[in-house]
Length: 208
Image 1: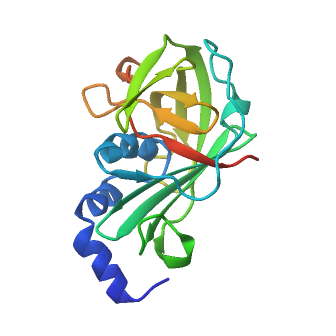
Image 2: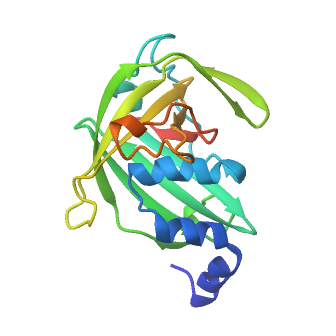
């Protein structure tokens, strides 16, 4: 942990992330919101060199094995950054940790704060038609867009048992995209499942 001075700097310069942190929780629902809200910010890959795998074959739905591992989204502004680390596990759970850093690349050597770990369970559903998404000016075609439902499993959490409905896709085994819930399709019910992909990928850092 760093001094109160650093925490003051974080609050001073990080208005967007402070709002994000207070309104959302570090669970998969948070990831969904984070991808939307962070889409307009500067994105950095946090740690690792990414997976060398290729994910599901073109035109096929994702499987649990495609997701297993650690995925990180890092956003930076004004000299500080916020990182969300999400690990998909063999037992169909997701463990999530939100951390703030006194640098622009989510370097753990300069961590300011870290929230408690939270847990979700997940279930994959139907394969959906291909989608395109533009990341840093490059148009990417995603062929393995798949429905995913997540349930809050964090004991004592006020949203325990809440289910969120979204979509997910992986590019080249190394970038994880999720549904865009910024509009009316919030993912709160099956009928409100997002139908488009948000342009803010998480980067795979560790294979389990």
